[in-house]
Length: 169
Image (cartoon, rainbow, N blue to C red; front, side, top):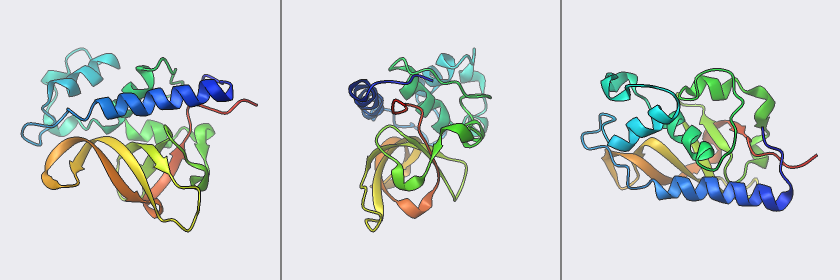
């Protein structure tokens, strides 16, 4: 875990979100986890031959999120495989109250095994939406396409907010 000063924390958060946004070229060709960059995400996490994985075994949302942090030299001191949503859910010491979520925090959902990054989170609790960016998610304009997309989501869907880049103190 990197504990950073405020300006460094902001810069790291901007880096993570910026990297995530730079990956919006990743669109699955057949909605079967089949873009070459997906294999690169897994290889970066130590999977030697991800191209040999069955597509149904290659859910890549957590691999994407992990690579967003790693691309900005943020160490992930999580116990378990970084490509598994369950690893992120189990990282209780990094959980923050949902109302405090912010840019570059990871979020898991109440409705399934999925993880994304927060791009924008309005601090007003009465404002019900936020903007997420994630991999292995559906195109908000074409449900048949999957890849890396920005999506407006409802805050009520969030199960856990996970802050890897911490405030000092």
